[in-house]
Image (cartoon, helix red, strand yellow):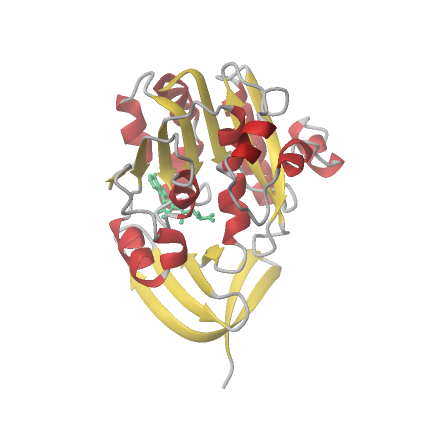
Length: 283
Ligand code: SAM
């Protein structure tokens, strides 16, 4: 008998993956957590029925949400990661020797514990001495911070359920306050392909723009996310992601990556019209 996992990208579009074994199925205080062993995409983390990452393509998302900001400010030392309990963003940040302190604020302790046990390929750096894990709501955590971070990465679930608060004006305003003068905010910014995601993305972008003088969007091709065209937000008080790119510095770090490189860095901010039109409110 064949076993398939199906994710509803919309009410009328589904995405199915053939499964070898259902490793974990648990209802935590915050969400349903499933971890699957698939035939072709390796292990998969699913939260409330949505694919968070697969072993086969998680590197794309985690390289793009970290190496882009890291290449703009080589002086980044203190980082706040909100969400990201799978450890993939933290893994990439720990590869940079200059990073001295990472606060990881993950609302669901069970995500961290289960990823440590079943997804060592993303969670392997959560034990790094620079990493400090806080099991609480990122919306509340950031209220207490001021002028403290060089970089904030919002590696959240989608804007409903526990992640809803991480797309609000209050949250982005508090992130702005928690960053120092050269601070950078990067967030998981959904997609424009399906209407529901497009509305969430446009709303979030407008809210970010109301706090940050520089607020741009960049894209990556992530096959297992709805439509495969996934967006990230880059916001900053002073640093422009393309004009201030330190490509030579990043190359000198000698980090082997499988998606990000110095040319993808500038190219990913060149957006197609189907994204530009949504951002400009033309559709
Ligand atoms: N890194 C993965 C990816 O490739 O997209 C997905 C992100 S990670 C699994 C999303 C995390 O955000 C989840 O572990 C979820 O528990 C956490 N989360 C959701 N709402 C949160 C909140 N308000 N505060 C802190 N963490 C939250």
